[in-house]
Amino acid sequence: MTSNRLRLSGTVCKKPVRKVSPSGIPHCQFLLEHLSTQEEAGFRRKAWCRMPVIISGMLHQDMTQHIKIGVQLTLEGFISCHQARNGQYVVVLHAEQIKFIHSGD
Image 1 (cartoon, helix red, strand yellow):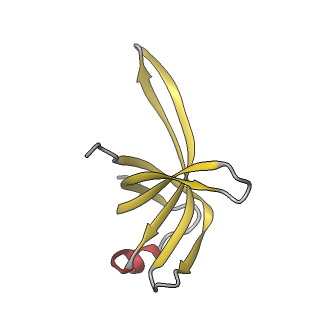
Image 2 (image 1 turned 180 degrees about the vertical axis):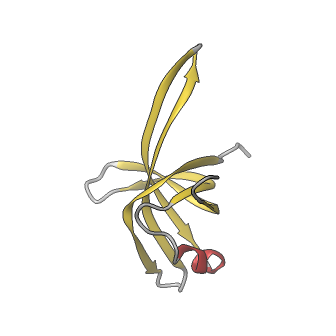
């Protein structure tokens, strides 16, 4: 099996959408914005991205109720492509571990 793990910190920048699938599984979807400075080839550069996130399952349902615009999170999970309504593919983080970042952390 090949590795597929991503850990990303950022700020929720789009209002979460909460849905329940026909099979009864709760889902929380939102957009996470990441901004940092990274070192690459001996130079410092800004790294920026906006990543769609999905958190699924009863295990995280209580925690996802606290997710709103402006909240800072560190998420870990796997990535997968989803086809958007316009036919383009988008990489989505399926978060399995959630950590809220509080001011001063």
